[in-house]
Length: 173
Image 1 (tube, rainbow, N blue to C red):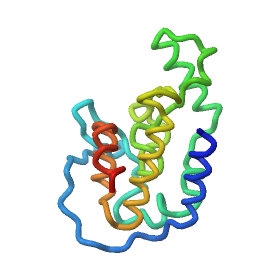
Image 2: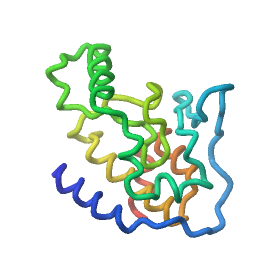
Image 3: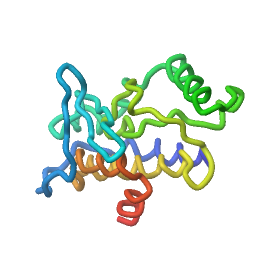
């Protein structure tokens, strides 16, 4: 199932083009910038860091450009270290590492910060709240942003605040 999902996601990447300008409603969240730090999405859970290189004006050269996530994705040596740390903090054995994804709360495909810990969490691959399910939403939101049908900052806020509610809102479109 995971391989099929990734194949579907990969196949769709070639068809993303620069966004078409369309009028958008005002953003639904507060974007914050701490002096000398990355911008972030303010949620009820805290401030989720964003990649400062990804903005409404740069989506065509960043998240909508083929190969973008490969360029910004941290190395597996970095992500495996973070994953092991988060497993230990949860009281889980590192032997369970393959059962979890190191999830970007705001995904790289929507301009989430690649390395900031406040944008990283453990997510099981399988199950009701599994990464396989969230990955489909991430791809859908990226498509909507790249088509100009959804503002980047609205997509970021939606997925950062409550990805299940966001899924209900956007996967039906």
